[in-house]
Image (cartoon, rainbow, N blue to C red; front, side, top):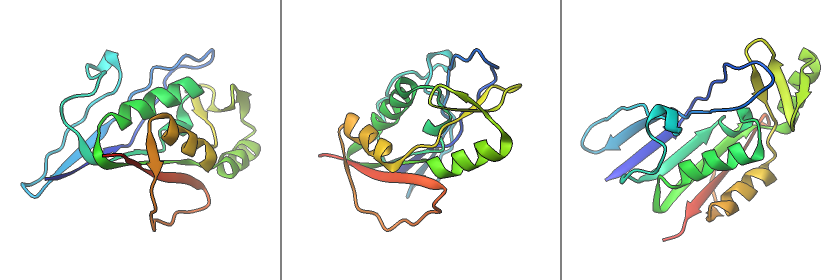
Length: 166
């Protein structure tokens, strides 16, 4: 049976000084037996901090790593997503590009923080433009090979599809 897992949201609610406790929300669809939806968090505070016994053909981390405050936090989130991919399955990572975030930071006069920007200080929101090369590094760090893909996205998005070896 084929399954898809999508991670689609992270929120911060702390103003500087920033410390991050991110969470990922996942929507799960199973075929052909119908549709199953659930919401889970990859953070101990939300009760689902380690890989379960289910694995998926495709796991997506879309606009996740570009809102995490540090390289370590980004790697933790990608490792959490990667452990959900079955052998031979795929991991899609997409993030806002460096040029997209830099342009918004300039127009919005965002303040620099760590390797990115605080976009709304009162909400403690953070943005970092992620180059494709950095996404490639994450793929390698979790043992995935870059896979060919005909997907075409805006230049505002950096992305790669990785494949877990059998």
